[in-house]
Length: 152
Image (cartoon, rainbow, N blue to C red; front, top):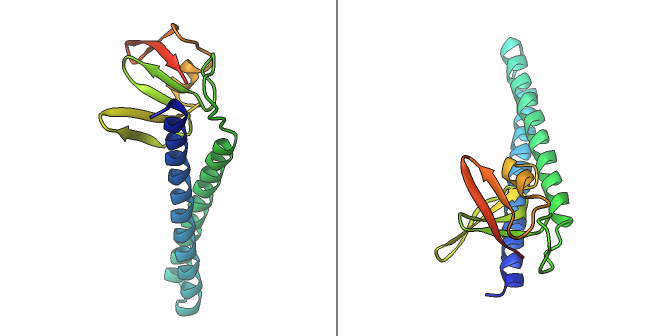
């Protein structure tokens, strides 16, 4: 598999992750809204107020999660997966002897055969350390020295 195809697959993995997350949150928000509507129709008194308050808090929490997921989507829309970069930046695939990192969003591990690729945000501790580094540079992460062998 070419480096560009690999980066396309990693990008698609991240995009699927975000879209699935947004869809799940929107579905949960609809459920909460339906519960709020039925709560209004069926209850009265203190129990009613407590139930409504809890549903309102849940709706606010889901709203924050949705905003966070939409921010991830905005970051992904800025990712440039064109091949070969001299330094690690958004959209880079950084390979070390220890692990391989796709600098985009925190979407977890992507496996191809025995190879593992970690989709990480630029704001993660290791993302911050990798940013701006080049081939041959080293970083110390969790007590391990990682030497960058390739940037795609």
